[in-house]
Image 1: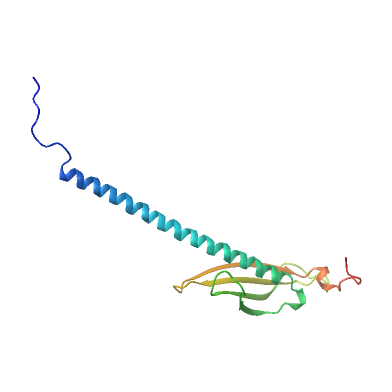
Image 2 (image 1 turned 120 degrees about the horizontal axis):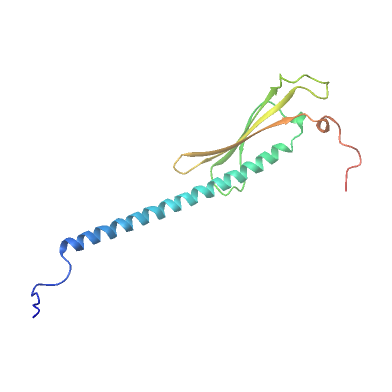
Length: 152
């Protein structure tokens, strides 16, 4: 003969509290991970915009004729930038190549070192910066006048 227990069946208070603690911990961990994912998405968006603006400025300065470069720093802001408080800064300095002999007057031992920075000041006053650095040598094409007649 089988005897049945006359006690109550179900979970004890301790078991319920432990399961609630596990569920709460899991929910908080998932919310934290979601929040971090949103922050990283915003940060990646900022970086993409800043790199695009930097490429634009590097392209602008690459169009300048060699003889129009001058030592110093220049800065400004972007019109219609997707982010507020974004500025650019360009530093140009003449560098002499001491390891190379001067061939003739058309091929000097000088080049320009150009550093372009894009700086974004966030609403919390922290800054995010991206920069590119390139060198510009005098080429024969830069020293000569363009051929007459133009194209197209």
